[in-house]
Amino acid sequence: MDKLEYTALGQTVHHCVLPNGLNIYVDVRPEYNKQFAFFATRYGGMDLRFRGEEGEWLDTPAGVAHFLEHKTFDTEDGNALQQMAANGVDPNAFTTASMTGYFFDGVQNFEDNLRILLSFVSVPWYTQESVDKEQGIIAQEIRMCEDDPNDEAYYCLLEAMYVNHPVQNRVAGTVESISHITADTLYQCHRTFYRPGNMVLCAAGNIDPQRVADIAQEVLTKRQTSTTPTDRGQPEPSRVREKLTRRTMAVSMPLMALGIKGTPAKKGEGLRQRLVAELTCDVLFSPSAPLYNRLYEQGLLNSSFGSFYSAGPDYALLMAEGESRDPERVRDEVLKEAARLAAEGIDRELWDRLKKAAYGAMVRRLNSMEDTCIELAEAHFNEEEYLSFPQVFQSIESTDGEALLREWCTEERIALAIIAPEE
Image (tube, rainbow, N blue to C red; front, side, top):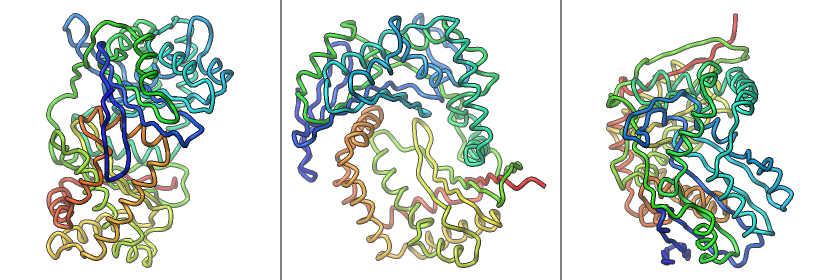
């Protein structure tokens, strides 16, 4: 295996590509008692249209990736969750807009559990009876999310922001969309996306990198595979679909989600854009920001308010959410402050302080094997190196944040979703 050296962090990651196309990354930590493994596919809630095995374009219902995550734990011999739990580890999985990942952590039986993980993820087993049963379970989960004001604000905002891009679709789908999922649908999507060339395996702990590669080569198919072409619709305009969307729910105070539609990063520049965007988000919305403190003192925001940057294939956005008695005024104040900062410049002392805090937080996150493995996987899918972030931080200046504000923070790029109290 190759060694990827990151001297600024004192980190070494072992990497190899198997003949079947699977990329493997291993972060050896001899001082740790626990081990962690993460097996992920480049397939998420927004991947609804893709090229099939015969070269034809196929359309699938919203929610298949999430449904597949639930059913992948089923095996002909029982349930892999129970098998791994009995073997001394804690397994789980998640689905995002662009990725599905399966993982476990524990202090014993790492190699046995790695075999189980690779086996149940790569060998599908579904019956129509079990799919029908799961539809009822996931439908309940969807209804619970629809009753959650925070979830509703988030997806209402995405629907308002995006005209064509499928990121606006709910990862779990809708009760109606999942009713069209069959066992054949799951088998078809598994064959298409759950192949080694479209996946990545990341592991960390006191483990032997070569043993990880040997086990993967032993369990998985030997046939060479590649990534899967997907179609995300017509090109997305820079403007939002709707500037304001509103609905009522059982909330005591209006809940707002404010979105700023960004420009997707160019290939190889995703990590840099992420760091600039996160810092710019802090300049606008963190408790250290003048705007946040002014709105807080005026009673327009409270401690529930938070913000983040989100990005994936062909999309990027800044989002701020929380309770406010006057969401539209908050939006207007954000636009004013962004214009002021773009014209007058970001306070250099504030920028440097936020930059040091952000860098320290990323270094501290390396203590988590789970966070590190997931970041390595996401970076791999984006064709970047996550652990190069120290060098990227050095190249970032406040002028980068000002340029982002000038380009992104315009009236046509901002949308507001409001969940108002019922009358």
